[in-house]
Structure formats: structure tokens, C-alpha cells
Length: 380
Image (cartoon, rainbow, N blue to C red; front, side, top):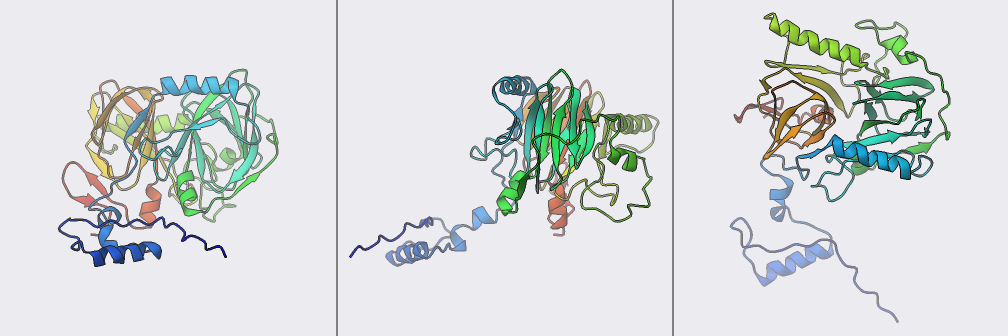
């Protein structure tokens, strides 16, 4: 008769001489071995890690240089085909604190995507919410549920979960942009679904404006045929000309002595869902920030993480103990509860996306402005 070995347990509990821990005895060791066999973990040995005094994200502040990312993406364009299997020529940012996972933060995924001339990225859909932000170039069309949407410099293009979408480069030049998704969140929650569509986008039409823009991109005007709120924005393109104008006018009003900016020299806008006035997607917040010449922001920290990309200009970024000079295209990560300060001599434009809506819905959002210990936004 063969006797099977006792399966190994993944639980390991160590005794400690710390003042808040029980005294080491043979009986305590025996108790801990019993816990291990039954897959039990006592709170008193783990409370410092599970319930810290403030958020201590495994993610680290980090910066990725566009001047390095773009040449690597170009090399991938010559070596890696786009088609079934890989689906997209997308290269994800891997935060150095997350063990090699392709995640920018524990909840956010960011990547540079590259499409060669006349190339198609096949159609698929997934439950992850996604967007594209174009830091430079044009020529690619993203086709969402059959609606062709032009992608141009400065455009923000949301694409909610479970919508069919593919990309087509109609030009004779390659194009790169950044993708943002909530992949890590859905991966952790075991809530992901994915489905293949056609190998090519269903239309090569190239209208100046998509159908979604023709219906929804009229400021403060809502079609009476669409009065029900939707969980994500039905508008598929937020054009740079409107973003730029809104930021310019905020700073102009400030210069005229009117209250229009979030702080001196700091203009900012949030992309919203026109059916609710809330965030464009349930899990993602997207914003654009403009710092005038000679501006330094007040230090800010908040629950939840964010990714920034420099659209234009130059500046200095401090996240926690890390400080970098940043310029066009550079991306950087701000982990949860890490203090952030931005400064610029010449002016700085920044695109930002974050997971803030999650924490607001859970009533766990908290913001600290300045170096004091007073936090706003959460019942204490």
C-alpha cells in the first residue's frame, strides 16, 4: 500500500521576540504548526502588514522616458507582427515594485502601442475599460462598434469595456500612442472576459467626425433621444482643440483677476461622461493639467494611484523621495499616498489618469494638501 505524503502548506508562521508578540514556547510553536497545516493565519502576526498606519503601496515612483520608449516600439514594429495571438503591438510599463508584472500600479495598466502604415489591429472586445491618448502624430482610426474615430495629437479617446474595437492605420507613416486600462484591477478580481472579433476593422471610412461626436460633442447640449445615464461615456473622442481652449481660458481669466484655476498658475480639466457629469468610466478618472511658466504646485497626496504623461513642455516632478526632470512624452507613476509636487520654469502640459473613482465609490478616498496631517474627503 502506498501512503501519500502530506501536502506542503503555503502558510508559514514564524515566532517573534517583538514586544507585541506572544512569548516563544514549544507550545506556541506547536500551535503555529497546527495553523499552518489547516491553512490558518493569526491576525496578531500579520496586522502590521495588513492594517498599516497609512497606505504603503508595493508600487514605486518611477519614470519612463519617451525618448527610450519610442525607439523600442519602432524596433518592435519591424520584428513583431500584429494579428491573432498578440492582438496588439502594445508594450506595457512594468512598475519596479510589482515583481515583473506588466502593471504600472496595482490597479492601472499603461502601454505604448505602435501601428505600422496600412496595418490593422484585429477586432476584439473585453470587459476592461480602456482609453487611448495621442501624444504625437495622426493617421490611425480606432473603430468602436462600427464607428470610425480619428486619432490625432492631443486627443483623448475612451473605449468602455465590452465594446468591439480594432485599429487601422490609413496613412503611410507609423503611429504610436499610449493605452490605459484597468487590467490589474480586473485581473485581481477575477472578473475578466475577452472575445475575438473579425481580423480586420469592419469599415475603412474616414469621416472628419465620428457618429458619437456628431451626437454628443456639443457643449452643454444633450440629445433628447438619449436621456438615460450610461455607466461610461458614449462620446468616443475628446478633441485637443477643446481641451487646449479650456485650459487657455482658465489661465487668461486668472490673469484678469478672476478665480478660475485650481491654484495659482495651475489650470486643469476633467474629461466627463455627458450622461451623468461623472467620470468617463466607472474605474478610471482622466484629466489634463497645464502649469504656466514659473509655477510650482502645492504638495498633494491621495489614496489611489495615477499615471501622468507629459504632453508638452518641461518641468520637475517630485514623487515621494524621487525627483526627475521630465519632458515631452515622458510617463511617471504616483503610487497611493505618495506626495506629489510639480514645478516648471517654461510651462508644462500633463495628461493624467487615475483609479480615484474606485475609492470614492467605496468612501475610502482621502486627500492631503500641503505638508500638514489634515486629510480631506474621508469620514474619520
